[in-house]
Length: 133
Image (cartoon, rainbow, N blue to C red; front, top):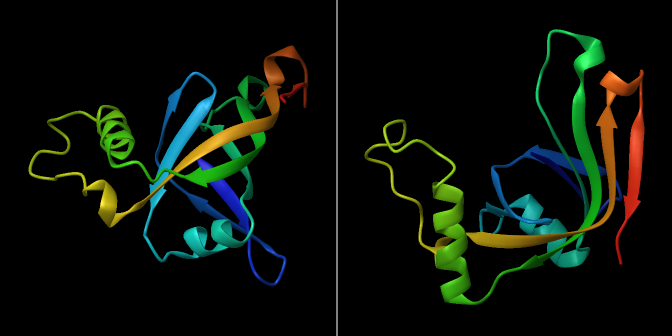
């Protein structure tokens, strides 16, 4: 997933993060004092995209989203989300690597406000737009 936050100078800052989801709620983590964390502390709005590469331009599918992010401060919830993030990876691929404890990172809960589903299989540039409360 790529997230774009608003820098102090007003320019967007886009970075790739790993994420997990529960229904429409997304979660990602970053360093405690990272640029993303500082940007979101100042302005919790972000834009994001989720997609994958394809060899066929007319097979492009993905989504973009306008959302708001809030830090997860409850330790038990943080532990649960760290397990959710870790479950996305193969144990063999990550043997010997441990997820950091929740207090060592900043965990964000991302709540969608506007979702745009991109599906070129329905025509070049086809999007379906959904607005959430």
